[in-house]
Image 1 (tube, rainbow, N blue to C red):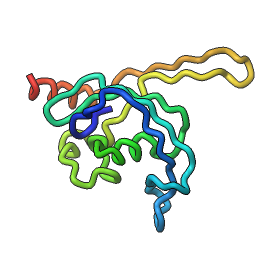
Image 2 (cartoon, helix red, strand yellow):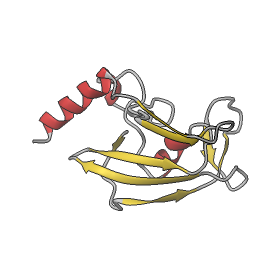
Image 3 (cartoon, rainbow, N blue to C red):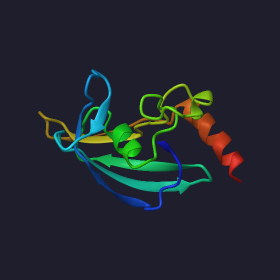
Length: 135
């Protein structure tokens, strides 16, 4: 994922409960009355105005990554719900978020399943533009 800004702490844990935002059926927020939500993150690369991160979710709340990153002041590029002042929407028409790998234990066979997905073309284009700008 690509986030706005540079994270001072290169890796860490965000342990903040998430709830539905009052008067919204879509938006979520950090709230003491919310459900437990835990995200582990690591900065893979930092640039002048943004960072590339990898996350591991301990929980799976709706919009968890988007809400957690916005809550620490580093919303996702292209995320118009949690990053209202995002200029990246000119470069990518969605959140700059991609799940490249997912692992789980199959509930019946108990076999470990690993799924991988290539980075989509729009994110490759965004990364290429961003790398050139920051050389």
